[in-house]
Image (tube, rainbow, N blue to C red; front, side, top):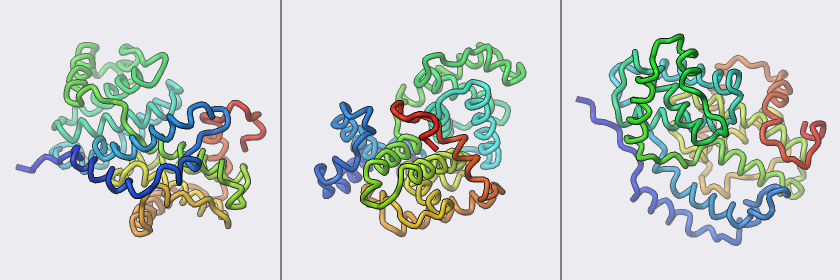
Length: 304
Protein backbone atom coordinates (compact mmCIF):
# COMPACT_ATOMS: atom_id res chain seq x y z
CA UNK A 1 0.00 0.00 0.00
CA UNK A 2 1.30 3.42 -0.93
CA UNK A 3 2.02 5.56 2.11
CA UNK A 4 -0.13 8.73 2.13
CA UNK A 5 1.84 11.93 1.66
CA UNK A 6 2.32 14.08 4.74
CA UNK A 7 1.51 17.75 4.93
CA UNK A 8 3.99 20.17 6.42
CA UNK A 9 3.66 20.18 10.20
CA UNK A 10 3.80 22.76 12.93
CA UNK A 11 7.40 21.81 13.64
CA UNK A 12 8.26 22.70 10.04
CA UNK A 13 6.66 26.09 10.63
CA UNK A 14 8.76 26.68 13.75
CA UNK A 15 12.00 25.83 11.97
CA UNK A 16 11.03 28.10 9.08
CA UNK A 17 10.24 30.93 11.48
CA UNK A 18 13.75 30.54 12.90
CA UNK A 19 15.08 30.79 9.36
CA UNK A 20 13.38 34.17 9.03
CA UNK A 21 14.65 35.42 12.37
CA UNK A 22 18.06 36.74 11.13
CA UNK A 23 16.22 39.08 8.75
CA UNK A 24 15.46 42.10 10.91
CA UNK A 25 11.96 43.54 10.65
CA UNK A 26 13.21 47.11 10.28
CA UNK A 27 15.37 46.15 7.30
CA UNK A 28 12.45 45.18 5.12
CA UNK A 29 9.57 47.01 6.78
CA UNK A 30 9.75 49.78 4.18
CA UNK A 31 10.37 47.29 1.38
CA UNK A 32 7.17 45.40 2.19
CA UNK A 33 5.11 48.55 2.18
CA UNK A 34 1.70 48.80 0.51
CA UNK A 35 0.56 51.02 -2.31
CA UNK A 36 -0.08 54.64 -1.35
CA UNK A 37 -3.84 54.11 -1.20
CA UNK A 38 -3.37 51.57 1.61
CA UNK A 39 -0.72 53.38 3.65
CA UNK A 40 -2.82 53.03 6.80
CA UNK A 41 -2.33 49.27 6.74
CA UNK A 42 1.48 49.23 6.54
CA UNK A 43 2.05 47.72 9.97
CA UNK A 44 -0.65 45.11 9.50
CA UNK A 45 0.79 44.29 6.10
CA UNK A 46 4.21 43.50 7.51
CA UNK A 47 2.82 41.29 10.25
CA UNK A 48 0.55 39.54 7.76
CA UNK A 49 3.46 38.87 5.41
CA UNK A 50 5.65 37.43 8.18
CA UNK A 51 2.80 35.24 9.39
CA UNK A 52 2.01 33.92 5.91
CA UNK A 53 5.65 33.18 5.14
CA UNK A 54 5.89 31.26 8.40
CA UNK A 55 2.70 29.26 7.80
CA UNK A 56 2.76 28.62 4.05
CA UNK A 57 4.49 25.28 4.55
CA UNK A 58 1.67 24.04 6.78
CA UNK A 59 -0.96 24.53 4.08
CA UNK A 60 1.20 23.57 1.09
CA UNK A 61 0.41 19.93 0.20
CA UNK A 62 3.41 18.43 -1.57
CA UNK A 63 2.93 15.29 -3.67
CA UNK A 64 -0.82 15.41 -3.12
CA UNK A 65 -1.43 12.74 -5.77
CA UNK A 66 0.73 10.10 -4.06
CA UNK A 67 -2.38 9.04 -2.18
CA UNK A 68 -4.45 8.66 -5.35
CA UNK A 69 -4.86 5.43 -7.30
CA UNK A 70 -7.19 6.81 -10.00
CA UNK A 71 -6.58 10.57 -10.26
CA UNK A 72 -3.54 11.39 -12.42
CA UNK A 73 -1.39 14.47 -13.03
CA UNK A 74 -3.06 14.94 -16.41
CA UNK A 75 -6.55 14.73 -14.94
CA UNK A 76 -5.63 17.32 -12.32
CA UNK A 77 -4.35 19.69 -15.02
CA UNK A 78 -7.54 19.31 -17.09
CA UNK A 79 -9.78 19.95 -14.08
CA UNK A 80 -7.84 23.07 -13.02
CA UNK A 81 -7.88 24.37 -16.60
CA UNK A 82 -11.66 23.97 -16.62
CA UNK A 83 -12.00 25.60 -13.19
CA UNK A 84 -9.89 28.54 -14.39
CA UNK A 85 -12.31 29.14 -17.26
CA UNK A 86 -15.28 28.82 -14.93
CA UNK A 87 -13.82 31.32 -12.45
CA UNK A 88 -12.80 33.91 -15.05
CA UNK A 89 -15.28 33.55 -17.90
CA UNK A 90 -18.45 32.28 -16.26
CA UNK A 91 -18.48 33.78 -12.77
CA UNK A 92 -15.87 36.52 -13.26
CA UNK A 93 -14.55 35.90 -9.76
CA UNK A 94 -11.32 37.27 -8.30
CA UNK A 95 -8.06 35.40 -8.79
CA UNK A 96 -7.94 34.79 -5.04
CA UNK A 97 -10.92 32.48 -5.45
CA UNK A 98 -9.16 30.39 -8.10
CA UNK A 99 -5.98 29.99 -6.03
CA UNK A 100 -7.93 29.03 -2.92
CA UNK A 101 -9.98 26.55 -4.97
CA UNK A 102 -6.82 24.78 -6.12
CA UNK A 103 -5.39 24.82 -2.59
CA UNK A 104 -8.56 23.20 -1.24
CA UNK A 105 -8.52 20.65 -4.06
CA UNK A 106 -4.90 19.65 -3.46
CA UNK A 107 -5.17 19.54 0.33
CA UNK A 108 -8.18 17.26 0.09
CA UNK A 109 -6.43 15.01 -2.45
CA UNK A 110 -3.46 14.75 -0.08
CA UNK A 111 -5.63 13.23 2.63
CA UNK A 112 -8.46 11.43 0.85
CA UNK A 113 -8.53 9.00 -2.11
CA UNK A 114 -10.98 10.16 -4.78
CA UNK A 115 -12.64 8.11 -7.52
CA UNK A 116 -12.57 9.37 -11.10
CA UNK A 117 -16.32 9.80 -11.26
CA UNK A 118 -16.19 12.12 -8.23
CA UNK A 119 -13.23 14.22 -9.33
CA UNK A 120 -15.21 16.99 -11.04
CA UNK A 121 -17.60 16.93 -8.10
CA UNK A 122 -14.64 17.67 -5.83
CA UNK A 123 -13.58 20.50 -8.15
CA UNK A 124 -16.91 22.34 -8.04
CA UNK A 125 -17.21 21.72 -4.30
CA UNK A 126 -13.78 23.27 -3.76
CA UNK A 127 -14.95 26.24 -5.85
CA UNK A 128 -18.10 26.51 -3.74
CA UNK A 129 -16.11 26.62 -0.50
CA UNK A 130 -13.57 29.08 -1.93
CA UNK A 131 -16.34 31.28 -3.30
CA UNK A 132 -18.04 31.46 0.09
CA UNK A 133 -14.72 32.50 1.62
CA UNK A 134 -13.62 35.07 -0.98
CA UNK A 135 -16.64 36.39 -2.85
CA UNK A 136 -19.50 38.66 -1.85
CA UNK A 137 -21.82 36.58 -4.01
CA UNK A 138 -20.59 32.96 -3.99
CA UNK A 139 -21.72 30.49 -6.66
CA UNK A 140 -25.15 28.93 -6.31
CA UNK A 141 -25.25 25.15 -5.99
CA UNK A 142 -27.78 24.95 -8.81
CA UNK A 143 -25.42 26.85 -11.12
CA UNK A 144 -22.59 24.45 -10.31
CA UNK A 145 -24.89 21.54 -11.13
CA UNK A 146 -25.65 23.10 -14.53
CA UNK A 147 -21.94 23.58 -15.20
CA UNK A 148 -21.48 19.85 -14.62
CA UNK A 149 -24.36 19.11 -17.03
CA UNK A 150 -26.41 17.58 -14.24
CA UNK A 151 -23.85 14.87 -13.48
CA UNK A 152 -24.32 15.51 -9.75
CA UNK A 153 -27.20 16.61 -7.57
CA UNK A 154 -27.50 19.12 -4.75
CA UNK A 155 -27.30 16.49 -2.02
CA UNK A 156 -23.97 15.17 -3.35
CA UNK A 157 -22.40 18.64 -3.42
CA UNK A 158 -23.63 19.54 0.07
CA UNK A 159 -22.47 16.20 1.45
CA UNK A 160 -18.98 16.58 -0.07
CA UNK A 161 -18.81 20.21 1.07
CA UNK A 162 -19.34 19.06 4.65
CA UNK A 163 -16.63 16.41 4.25
CA UNK A 164 -14.16 18.93 2.78
CA UNK A 165 -14.77 21.34 5.66
CA UNK A 166 -14.20 18.58 8.21
CA UNK A 167 -11.09 17.12 6.57
CA UNK A 168 -9.44 20.53 6.16
CA UNK A 169 -10.34 21.66 9.65
CA UNK A 170 -12.37 24.67 8.44
CA UNK A 171 -9.05 26.40 7.69
CA UNK A 172 -9.07 28.47 4.50
CA UNK A 173 -7.11 31.60 5.36
CA UNK A 174 -4.08 30.15 3.61
CA UNK A 175 -1.09 31.79 1.86
CA UNK A 176 -1.22 31.46 -1.93
CA UNK A 177 1.06 32.32 -4.82
CA UNK A 178 -1.31 35.12 -5.73
CA UNK A 179 -0.92 36.79 -2.35
CA UNK A 180 2.87 36.75 -2.54
CA UNK A 181 2.97 37.88 -6.16
CA UNK A 182 0.79 40.90 -5.42
CA UNK A 183 2.84 41.63 -2.31
CA UNK A 184 6.17 41.55 -4.14
CA UNK A 185 4.74 43.51 -7.06
CA UNK A 186 3.57 46.30 -4.77
CA UNK A 187 6.99 46.33 -3.15
CA UNK A 188 8.60 46.68 -6.55
CA UNK A 189 6.49 49.75 -7.30
CA UNK A 190 7.82 51.44 -4.19
CA UNK A 191 11.47 50.62 -4.87
CA UNK A 192 11.46 51.18 -8.63
CA UNK A 193 13.50 54.38 -8.41
CA UNK A 194 16.38 52.58 -6.71
CA UNK A 195 16.52 50.14 -9.61
CA UNK A 196 15.96 52.71 -12.34
CA UNK A 197 12.73 51.05 -13.50
CA UNK A 198 9.57 52.82 -14.58
CA UNK A 199 6.08 52.17 -13.27
CA UNK A 200 5.15 50.89 -16.69
CA UNK A 201 7.94 48.29 -16.62
CA UNK A 202 6.93 47.00 -13.22
CA UNK A 203 3.22 46.87 -14.01
CA UNK A 204 3.90 44.90 -17.17
CA UNK A 205 6.06 42.54 -15.12
CA UNK A 206 3.21 42.13 -12.64
CA UNK A 207 0.71 41.37 -15.42
CA UNK A 208 2.95 38.72 -17.01
CA UNK A 209 3.74 37.36 -13.55
CA UNK A 210 0.04 36.96 -12.85
CA UNK A 211 -0.38 35.04 -16.06
CA UNK A 212 2.57 32.73 -15.37
CA UNK A 213 1.52 32.11 -11.77
CA UNK A 214 -2.02 31.26 -12.85
CA UNK A 215 -0.80 28.87 -15.54
CA UNK A 216 1.50 27.22 -13.01
CA UNK A 217 -1.53 26.03 -11.03
CA UNK A 218 -2.03 23.36 -13.68
CA UNK A 219 1.60 22.23 -13.54
CA UNK A 220 2.01 19.57 -10.87
CA UNK A 221 5.81 19.89 -10.74
CA UNK A 222 5.70 23.64 -10.15
CA UNK A 223 3.10 23.19 -7.42
CA UNK A 224 5.68 21.26 -5.41
CA UNK A 225 7.50 24.55 -4.75
CA UNK A 226 6.38 26.95 -2.03
CA UNK A 227 3.91 29.63 -3.19
CA UNK A 228 6.28 32.46 -2.26
CA UNK A 229 9.05 30.91 -4.37
CA UNK A 230 6.73 30.46 -7.36
CA UNK A 231 5.73 34.12 -7.04
CA UNK A 232 9.37 35.26 -7.05
CA UNK A 233 10.17 33.10 -10.07
CA UNK A 234 7.07 34.22 -11.98
CA UNK A 235 8.22 37.83 -11.64
CA UNK A 236 11.78 36.96 -12.66
CA UNK A 237 10.50 35.04 -15.68
CA UNK A 238 8.32 38.02 -16.58
CA UNK A 239 11.41 40.25 -16.48
CA UNK A 240 13.15 37.81 -18.84
CA UNK A 241 10.25 37.77 -21.29
CA UNK A 242 9.97 41.55 -21.27
CA UNK A 243 13.77 41.83 -21.65
CA UNK A 244 14.10 44.28 -18.79
CA UNK A 245 17.74 45.29 -18.43
CA UNK A 246 17.33 46.82 -14.98
CA UNK A 247 15.32 44.89 -12.44
CA UNK A 248 13.98 45.31 -8.96
CA UNK A 249 15.58 42.61 -6.85
CA UNK A 250 12.95 40.83 -4.79
CA UNK A 251 14.43 37.42 -4.09
CA UNK A 252 16.56 38.49 -1.13
CA UNK A 253 13.56 39.54 0.91
CA UNK A 254 11.99 36.11 0.53
CA UNK A 255 15.05 34.34 1.92
CA UNK A 256 15.64 31.99 -1.02
CA UNK A 257 19.07 31.17 -2.39
CA UNK A 258 19.90 31.28 -6.08
CA UNK A 259 19.90 27.49 -6.51
CA UNK A 260 16.31 27.24 -5.25
CA UNK A 261 15.21 30.02 -7.56
CA UNK A 262 16.94 28.56 -10.61
CA UNK A 263 15.39 25.16 -10.02
CA UNK A 264 11.88 26.61 -9.91
CA UNK A 265 12.61 29.00 -12.79
CA UNK A 266 13.60 26.12 -15.02
CA UNK A 267 10.21 24.48 -14.50
CA UNK A 268 8.44 27.75 -15.31
CA UNK A 269 10.50 28.16 -18.49
CA UNK A 270 9.54 24.66 -19.61
CA UNK A 271 5.89 25.37 -18.78
CA UNK A 272 5.88 28.62 -20.77
CA UNK A 273 7.49 26.98 -23.80
CA UNK A 274 4.85 24.24 -23.70
CA UNK A 275 2.05 26.81 -23.77
CA UNK A 276 3.02 27.83 -27.29
CA UNK A 277 2.48 31.53 -26.58
CA UNK A 278 4.06 33.97 -29.00
CA UNK A 279 6.51 36.15 -27.00
CA UNK A 280 5.65 39.03 -29.33
CA UNK A 281 2.05 38.84 -28.10
CA UNK A 282 2.95 39.68 -24.50
CA UNK A 283 1.03 42.94 -24.68
CA UNK A 284 -2.20 40.96 -25.03
CA UNK A 285 -1.36 39.19 -21.78
CA UNK A 286 -0.56 42.54 -20.17
CA UNK A 287 -3.92 43.89 -21.22
CA UNK A 288 -5.73 40.81 -19.95
CA UNK A 289 -4.01 40.66 -16.57
CA UNK A 290 -2.98 44.28 -16.01
CA UNK A 291 -6.30 45.63 -14.78
CA UNK A 292 -6.90 43.15 -11.98
CA UNK A 293 -6.78 44.84 -8.59
CA UNK A 294 -5.36 48.04 -10.08
CA UNK A 295 -4.87 50.88 -7.64
CA UNK A 296 -7.86 53.20 -7.50
CA UNK A 297 -5.68 56.31 -7.80
CA UNK A 298 -4.65 55.31 -11.31
CA UNK A 299 -6.62 56.11 -14.40
CA UNK A 300 -7.23 53.19 -16.80
CA UNK A 301 -4.81 54.63 -19.33
CA UNK A 302 -2.01 54.91 -16.79
CA UNK A 303 -1.95 51.24 -15.84
CA UNK A 304 -0.42 49.98 -19.06
